Structures are given as structure tokens and as C-alpha cells.
Image (cartoon, rainbow, N blue to C red; front, side, top):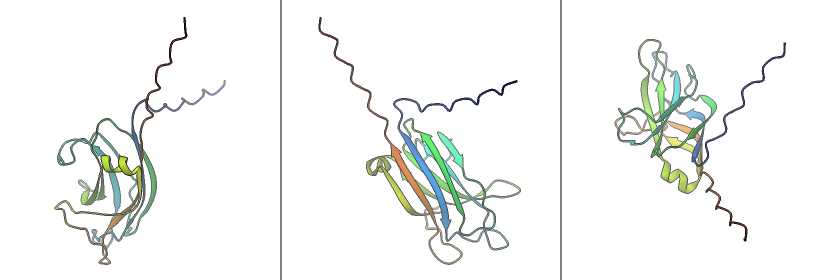
Length: 165
């Protein structure tokens, strides 16, 4: 018996803009757990209306949980196809063994801004759910090291002129 060939990867949809996000790391995260650390992970969401926090995200992906790390290194890469969303929201959460994860802070990135600058790479300060800066256990501003790239879909090719008659 011959093994079946693996399915071919799906080609990106024609005419769709895309965003690539690399969640490199977290820096200066706050003490959340009893033992002085955090079991952090990042939820990446595409949102049509960033103000509607209770509305379901258009798309969502998550990093793995890094247990007991105030300066976690995720190094995870995510790709999103865009369908009219307005913002990318990256939320740092503390994983809980029982119950829902706790929201620590978030970074909101307007896709229009990202499209205009084509991408960004750097530390992005976390804001708490009430809009205040999140401070780490060491007193420094808590931040995510992110790399984001906006890939505009190629313009459709102009139709060829008909051959002369």
C-alpha cells in the first residue's frame, strides 16, 4: 500500500488583504498568581467594531500558555485573512485551572493605521480593561513585543485588449 499524499495547503483567497502577526514575547508582566507569577497567553482577535467588546470576534487565535513567566517568549506566528474588520485586538490573559481566564490587559491596533504604515515591530504597552496602563511586578510598564505586517491584496489585472480584427 502506498500512503496517501497529504492534502495540499489551501491557496490564499484572491483579492483579500491579510495581516501577519508574530507574538514574540511579553515583558514586565504583573504578578497575578499566588506564587508571584502569571500563566500568560495572548488572544488575537479581528474585530469589526473594536468598541463592541461583547460582540464575537470575526476571527480569533491564541498563543500557547507560558506558565510562571513574567517575561514569556512565545515566538508564535499567525496569519489572518481580512473581511472588513477595523481592528486587531491582542489581549493578555492569565490562564486559570478552574474557571475563565483573567484579562490582564490589551493592545488595540487599528487596521487602517497598520495598512498605511505596512507594518510595525516593537513593544506595545498593555492597557487594563478600564484603560489604565498595566504595570509589571518590577514597576515597569507591561508590554507585548509584536511584529505585524499588512499585506494588501494585489489589484486585479486589467483585461487584455481584444486582438485586432
